[in-house]
Image 1 (tube, rainbow, N blue to C red):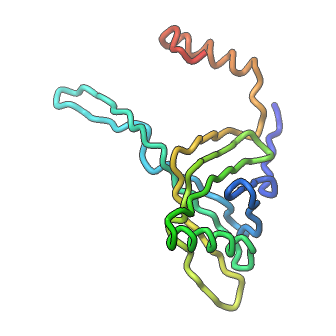
Image 2 (image 1 turned 90 degrees about the vertical axis):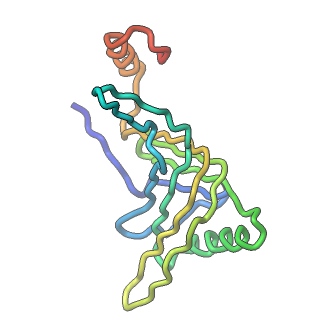
Image 3 (image 1 turned 180 degrees about the vertical axis):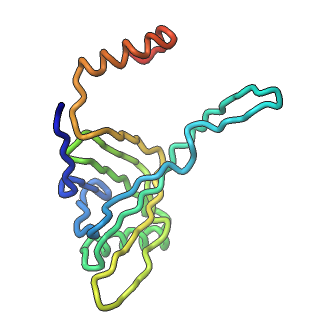
Amino acid sequence: MSLHTYSPGEVDLYLALVHEVTGFSEDSLIKITKDQPYFTTHRGAAGGVERLLNPDKTYTLQVSLSQTSPSNGVLNGLATLDSVSRVGAFPIFAKDGSGDSIFFAPTCWIESPPDADYGRGVKERIWTIKCADMVFGLSGNETTTLSQIGQLGSLLGQFGGNLGVF
C-alpha cells in the first residue's frame, strides 16, 4: 500500500508561457473540460453499435481567481488585446507538481470575462478560456513505473494481441 498526496499549492498555470497565474480562489483553481467526446456512438435498429471518432481537441479551461489576484489584470489585458486586434491568442501550460498531470495548448483565447461581483467579502472571478489542440495529460499523484507500464501492456495483450500501443 502506498500513500498518495495532492497539494493544491503545487498546481501551476502559465499564460503565454511567461506569466504564472497567482491568487487562485479558495475552493477551486482550474477546471479543464473537453468540449466534445472522443467518440460518438450510433446504434442501429438491429442492435449493432458503431462509433465515430471525433478529432476535435478543443477544451474549455476555467480559471477561478480571487478578486484581489493580480492575474485578473493580465487576463483582462489579453482579452482586451484580442478583442481589439484579434491577435491576442496565447499558449497555456498547466501542471500538478505533486503528481504527473500536465496540460498544454498552443492556441488559447479568453472566451468570456468573469462577472464583476462586489460585496462585503472577497469574491471569486471565473475566467473562461478556450484552448485549441490541447495535449491533455491527466494522471495521478504517483509516478508511473516501467513495471506498471509493462503490466498494462500485458493486460492489453490479453484483449486483442498487438494493439500497436506497446
